[in-house]
Length: 150
Image (cartoon, rainbow, N blue to C red; front, side):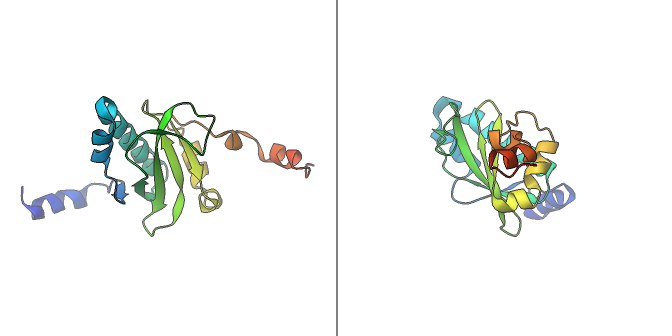
Protein backbone atom coordinates (compact mmCIF):
# COMPACT_ATOMS: atom_id res chain seq x y z
CA UNK A 1 0.00 0.00 0.00
CA UNK A 2 1.47 3.35 -0.97
CA UNK A 3 2.19 5.95 1.69
CA UNK A 4 -0.01 8.52 -0.04
CA UNK A 5 -2.96 6.13 0.02
CA UNK A 6 -2.44 5.26 3.69
CA UNK A 7 -2.05 8.93 4.59
CA UNK A 8 -5.30 9.67 2.72
CA UNK A 9 -7.16 7.06 4.72
CA UNK A 10 -5.73 8.35 7.98
CA UNK A 11 -6.86 11.91 7.32
CA UNK A 12 -10.44 10.79 6.74
CA UNK A 13 -10.69 8.94 10.04
CA UNK A 14 -10.55 10.30 13.57
CA UNK A 15 -7.06 10.52 15.01
CA UNK A 16 -6.45 7.80 17.57
CA UNK A 17 -4.43 8.14 20.74
CA UNK A 18 -0.77 8.83 19.98
CA UNK A 19 1.73 6.69 21.89
CA UNK A 20 4.82 8.72 22.82
CA UNK A 21 7.96 7.76 24.71
CA UNK A 22 10.26 4.78 24.49
CA UNK A 23 7.75 2.04 25.32
CA UNK A 24 5.48 0.97 22.48
CA UNK A 25 2.25 -1.04 22.81
CA UNK A 26 4.03 -3.99 21.19
CA UNK A 27 6.49 -3.98 24.12
CA UNK A 28 3.59 -4.88 26.42
CA UNK A 29 3.19 -8.08 24.42
CA UNK A 30 6.86 -9.04 24.51
CA UNK A 31 7.46 -8.14 28.18
CA UNK A 32 4.47 -9.85 29.80
CA UNK A 33 4.81 -13.45 28.68
CA UNK A 34 1.67 -15.33 27.73
CA UNK A 35 -0.54 -12.52 29.04
CA UNK A 36 1.16 -9.88 26.88
CA UNK A 37 -1.63 -9.65 24.28
CA UNK A 38 -4.21 -9.17 27.04
CA UNK A 39 -2.20 -6.32 28.58
CA UNK A 40 -1.75 -4.65 25.19
CA UNK A 41 -5.46 -4.93 24.37
CA UNK A 42 -6.50 -3.61 27.81
CA UNK A 43 -4.16 -0.61 27.44
CA UNK A 44 -5.50 0.22 23.97
CA UNK A 45 -9.16 -0.14 24.94
CA UNK A 46 -8.78 2.01 28.06
CA UNK A 47 -6.76 4.78 26.38
CA UNK A 48 -9.17 4.93 23.42
CA UNK A 49 -12.16 5.14 25.79
CA UNK A 50 -10.44 7.94 27.74
CA UNK A 51 -9.75 9.86 24.53
CA UNK A 52 -13.41 9.45 23.54
CA UNK A 53 -14.48 10.75 26.98
CA UNK A 54 -12.21 13.80 26.68
CA UNK A 55 -10.69 14.38 23.20
CA UNK A 56 -8.23 16.90 24.66
CA UNK A 57 -6.33 13.85 25.98
CA UNK A 58 -4.56 12.56 22.90
CA UNK A 59 -1.05 11.47 23.90
CA UNK A 60 -0.03 8.52 26.07
CA UNK A 61 3.32 7.55 27.51
CA UNK A 62 3.53 3.94 28.69
CA UNK A 63 5.76 4.07 31.76
CA UNK A 64 7.30 0.62 31.73
CA UNK A 65 6.33 -2.38 29.64
CA UNK A 66 6.17 -4.90 32.48
CA UNK A 67 3.10 -5.22 34.63
CA UNK A 68 3.87 -4.34 38.25
CA UNK A 69 2.21 -3.68 41.58
CA UNK A 70 1.37 -0.02 42.10
CA UNK A 71 3.60 2.01 44.40
CA UNK A 72 1.09 4.88 44.22
CA UNK A 73 -1.97 2.85 45.22
CA UNK A 74 -0.86 0.27 47.77
CA UNK A 75 -4.46 -0.88 48.30
CA UNK A 76 -4.57 -2.12 44.69
CA UNK A 77 -3.74 -5.82 44.79
CA UNK A 78 -3.82 -6.29 41.01
CA UNK A 79 -0.83 -5.78 38.77
CA UNK A 80 -0.97 -2.64 36.60
CA UNK A 81 0.52 -0.97 33.57
CA UNK A 82 1.04 2.75 34.25
CA UNK A 83 0.28 5.10 31.37
CA UNK A 84 0.82 8.88 31.47
CA UNK A 85 -1.83 10.99 29.74
CA UNK A 86 -1.21 14.35 28.07
CA UNK A 87 -2.75 16.81 25.67
CA UNK A 88 -1.38 17.34 22.15
CA UNK A 89 0.50 20.39 23.45
CA UNK A 90 2.27 18.23 26.05
CA UNK A 91 0.32 19.23 29.16
CA UNK A 92 0.30 16.26 31.51
CA UNK A 93 -3.19 15.64 32.88
CA UNK A 94 -2.48 12.54 34.96
CA UNK A 95 -1.79 8.85 34.77
CA UNK A 96 -3.89 5.75 34.54
CA UNK A 97 -3.29 2.33 36.07
CA UNK A 98 -4.65 -0.29 33.68
CA UNK A 99 -5.40 -3.80 34.97
CA UNK A 100 -5.23 -6.86 32.72
CA UNK A 101 -9.01 -7.34 33.01
CA UNK A 102 -9.57 -3.87 31.46
CA UNK A 103 -10.46 -2.08 34.69
CA UNK A 104 -8.49 1.08 35.48
CA UNK A 105 -7.94 3.94 37.91
CA UNK A 106 -7.23 7.51 36.83
CA UNK A 107 -4.89 9.65 38.93
CA UNK A 108 -5.28 13.26 37.77
CA UNK A 109 -2.54 15.82 38.11
CA UNK A 110 -3.39 19.24 39.52
CA UNK A 111 -4.07 20.42 35.97
CA UNK A 112 -6.11 17.27 35.37
CA UNK A 113 -8.39 18.24 38.25
CA UNK A 114 -8.52 21.98 37.51
CA UNK A 115 -9.15 21.42 33.80
CA UNK A 116 -12.02 19.04 34.43
CA UNK A 117 -10.32 16.05 32.79
CA UNK A 118 -11.06 13.82 35.78
CA UNK A 119 -14.70 14.94 35.82
CA UNK A 120 -15.11 14.14 32.12
CA UNK A 121 -13.66 10.66 32.60
CA UNK A 122 -15.94 10.00 35.58
CA UNK A 123 -18.98 11.40 33.79
CA UNK A 124 -18.34 9.17 30.75
CA UNK A 125 -18.94 6.06 32.88
CA UNK A 126 -16.30 4.10 30.99
CA UNK A 127 -16.62 0.37 31.55
CA UNK A 128 -14.01 -0.73 34.08
CA UNK A 129 -13.38 2.72 35.60
CA UNK A 130 -12.67 2.39 39.31
CA UNK A 131 -13.03 5.63 41.27
CA UNK A 132 -10.18 6.46 43.60
CA UNK A 133 -11.25 6.79 47.26
CA UNK A 134 -10.46 10.52 46.98
CA UNK A 135 -12.94 10.88 44.10
CA UNK A 136 -15.70 9.13 46.04
CA UNK A 137 -15.65 11.68 48.89
CA UNK A 138 -18.03 14.58 48.29
CA UNK A 139 -16.37 18.03 48.46
CA UNK A 140 -18.34 18.92 51.62
CA UNK A 141 -17.09 15.78 53.32
CA UNK A 142 -13.49 16.62 52.40
CA UNK A 143 -13.90 20.07 54.00
CA UNK A 144 -15.46 18.60 57.11
CA UNK A 145 -12.60 16.12 57.46
CA UNK A 146 -10.13 19.00 57.24
CA UNK A 147 -11.99 21.00 59.90
CA UNK A 148 -13.42 23.56 57.49
CA UNK A 149 -16.96 22.19 57.23
CA UNK A 150 -20.15 24.22 57.11
